[in-house]
Length: 369
Image (tube, rainbow, N blue to C red; front, side, top):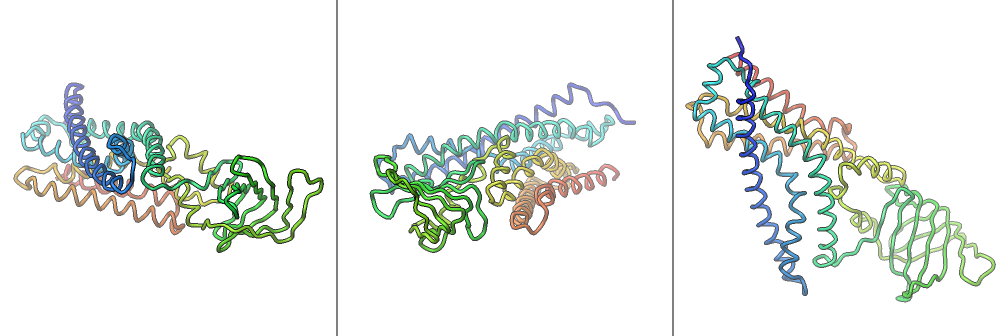
């Protein structure tokens, strides 16, 4: 006959796990912050005018985003340590003798991890995206000295480049882009002097980015003071921009928060860009709480055995093996999904579903045995 888990025991188990999770997460974040700061200091040493306070700030700004990557490992290691402690002190044996099933004393830990997963997706991810955007801005200004050439809005794409002479700045707008050949549709080009004085405007239904220049088809040129416009069937505009440079100028997917992703995905699709990688990231974030719960089941499958059957080294090796196996599986499937080899849902949800099924199967055999 199974006993009902009391609220006192539920809170006790949940509190034990929460304290362990906070401690291990803080430890991992501290190690990562140390190594990131050292790397930033190395890069800052090659630049003039980068104060130490700025480097320390940049390390902190990057930390929430990196923390989202290591959080599944923290969840797994915290569960392994918590169950190992309970097992070593024979508390699990006492709970089993009292009539509690494995599912009952796992419930508080699973509930905590699901809440942690929801909190990470709903709160930590948006905050981390905002702070990472600030980090990339500081990195471009002080370390990389690289300015963004592109801005993407739902109305279309805006590009900035230097003109043929030092006395011109060029801004290019396209309502839609056809990839992979970078063919722009409904194009407008604005030329400005260094003092922001308008020089001329080019309109074209289509433009193509080639090696070393833009080619505009059926272009119309308008200049201030001219009554009539000039029509040019084929107009070339030199550029130092390349497709790779333009793509690299986009904000990284990590800077797009969970709540902004649906709108940004629509923007990408409406302008002609591939939104599949961002769709996969969005679905992976939705699956995160389930992945955390699966981590608990796998940790329990490894650690909920009599203490004499394994030691701390076995648990550590098992935890590292499980964590990295899931990490590489997730990365591999997401890469396949981003290259359109497998469906988006399969790429994002498979690791969580596989881990849940595997952990549940092992625990059911353990419980029956």
